Image 1 (cartoon, rainbow, N blue to C red):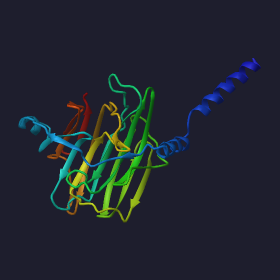
Image 2 (tube, one colour):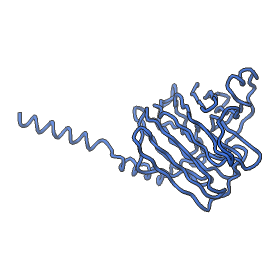
Image 3 (cartoon, helix red, strand yellow):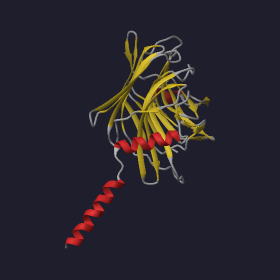
Image 4 (cartoon, rainbow, N blue to C red):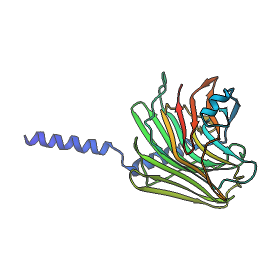
Amino acid sequence: MFAATLLCQALLATAAFAIPTSKERFAQRIARRAGGFNHQSYPKQGIEAAHVDLEVNAHRNASQTSYSSNWAGAVLSKSTATYKSVTGTFVVPTPKEPSGGSGTHYASAWVGIDGDTCGSAILQTGVDFNINGNSVSYDAWYEWYPDYAHDFSGISFKAGDTVEVTVTATSKTAGKATITNKSTGKTVSHSFSGQPSLCEYDAEWIVEDFQNNGGLVPLANFGKVEFTNAKAGTQSGSVGPSGATLIDIKQSNKVYTSSSVGSSSVTVEYVA
């Protein structure tokens, strides 16, 4: 009996040591970055405008639809400096390997300023979804392109958590990225200064197939990401995404997503 008790305790201890702590997971991400994996969100890589029936587009509350190799979601654009902040809330999905796929696959949900009509700089923040077999992980990050993404520490996620993401431009070269896990009450933020100049032309709610060292990562089946309470701040108040340009990911003549907008929401579904 005593021996059995000792064996049980040993097995429990082994199991406990096998589960990485949040600090260990962050250290693993740092090691992954140091080993050459560098998440970088790029400006929208356009392909061509989609030929969408006007009645269908009206039903989706969009002004038009376009295809991109890396972006899916919605973008509001102006030809003059307009957008000072962007925010949205979404429920963390459970990513899956795509049909017939194996190995690690990724997707990233974020909000940002610029990157569509202004590609010289992007202020953005979001959460990566990573799947490899039965292993699922989530990374929170901030980025001021053309720099690559940097991980937040001190925050974690699980499927079903409600997350709010916000970027604010305090000037064209300074701003703040904030992520709140509303399910746990944890908030992290990063302030920028002296950055490449934004145009403040674009406000975005995006699910991205991001890049690693210049190449697109394998895209995960992320299911559905719905940004609710979506709004973009301007000098005179705030606006919702209704009427935004919709974007869907298309690679090798295959469409992977279906995007739609409401008065205060942006929905991106994986459909491949």
